[in-house]
Length: 380
Picture 1 (cartoon, rainbow, N blue to C red):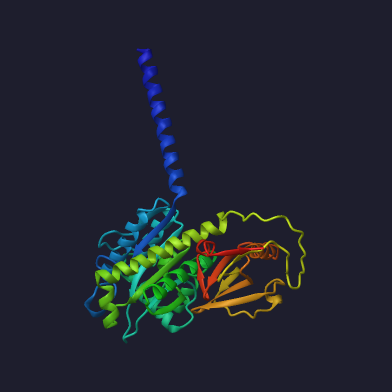
Picture 2 (cartoon, rainbow, N blue to C red):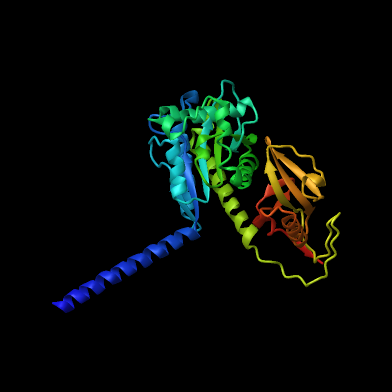
């Protein structure tokens, strides 16, 4: 009898150990994957906008499911949905789903509306609305909370009709702004360059659904259902498949850009003595030139238009900036020499820009770093 009890106890311990090991392996495996939360706007008794009789909730869901289906076939990604059916999900719950999944990225998909025949795509990141138009877009999307039970408690008195309420939304996402801007830029460039859709740019506005998340997050407006031609396109299978494909490519590009930023192997070059001039910040390094590509070090991003003077950037010169909609990105250095730009990145870090990173441009458009590093090179 005692032997049976001992064997039984050992079996239980073994099962528990194996279970714990299985959970640990599973969690480790999930953490190795890039977690993307896909959020189809509206749903259930909230149809979204009904421009030309189309339903925003249906179009956004079809596009999200197509994006998710493709990403799920890529072993690098784990996809989490806020909804996969015609179901109403409260905005604060959408954020909770993303946070619980410890997502690396949150992508919310919507369709726009206007009283005119306005058309075009735009991608938003969380921030202070810079004009009435942006505020009105955010107000329309945020008004969903009025359909929720007990919304005043869920959103701590937030009023979707109040510009003042928006100000409090921006603080939580501030540390993810730069990464959100990068993805938003990829999305808009793909829509414009690949699909020839009119780009209305990357913009900032105060969306509650983005405020609830603790990771890089964007809200994509696929176009205007109220525009006769664009609404018909977005309601078509062809339109939905094309828009989904562009979003898929943008997410993959974003992921690979992060991989390149942190994991690109160092090109092998002989050790050469450095000559550092703090005024012009020149260094003698081996050349690794990428034809047609310009590398820069991104040191800051925000809605303020700052003068490109060394005193405004901790003593750095060789400065440039690019405006994306109503946002500005600030860069240090400009060269086709990949070795040199890495040296300049080190200088920027020493000057206090510890979160800076290398970006690549081709034909005046930002491109994924991995793509840039595949172009033809010449070495000296």
